[in-house]
Length: 319
View 1: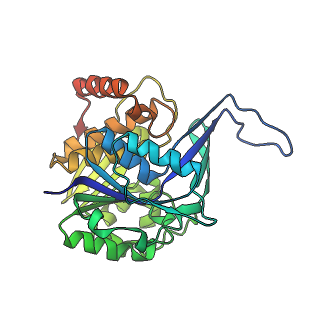
View 2: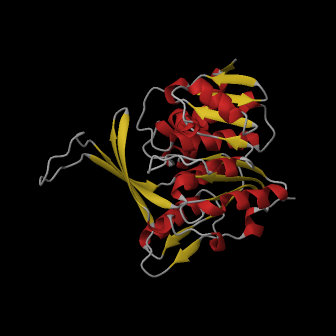
């Protein structure tokens, strides 16, 4: 018997979201904002938190600094039921990372202080802990600068232990999208990019050829399309899933990570691709109804009511 449904390794930091800023910031002028939120950030941690909130047993490995931001991040994961005993606290000048997000309606500025994010190394990970699971997930491939050269070997060792593996690269801040990713994809069962990332990785100008190209490398490719839902390619089959409609959008921070959590919560239990897509869209929709990537999942009564009501509506998948 596995200890966890899913283990996750990756970055652990906070998000500082400042609402109401103009798109162009004037120099040497103090700008006041009407709202702010300091919350758990980082793709890896949001996936872990929201997976646990959806009922999966989750183990999380990362590193943070010995500082208050690290305490807050760990407390948020623990409160959701994520097991964090292998998260390393790094001393010296290494501080917990921080991302500042400035939403502007349909788009946003994202500024990240890497800190402990890039300090994560293979020696910080307990392989026995990670493989005491049925599935392993990694996010933010291009931010894992210390771990990245070793990811193919890590995946290979986990795969040989019988785990299935999922990967969400997220953005490449250097906009290089290096081809070394293919070495890691050789061990991936579920690849979870968004539309822009898929086209960048495949170096295609449109989604269809990008999806076709990636489906030759990974058994299951799921591309998140934002307001258009999601599309998946598996064994020559293409399946589309319409988005879950909501009455109000607070912000889209963490929506893609929440989709990953919803999708994987069904995938690890052997659900159909259709059911996985539905749950992914449902979780992504839940996320955007509250600010930040985890706030809608933290409110148990609200989360359960939202999931129950939208499941009853039967918003579904179509070929």
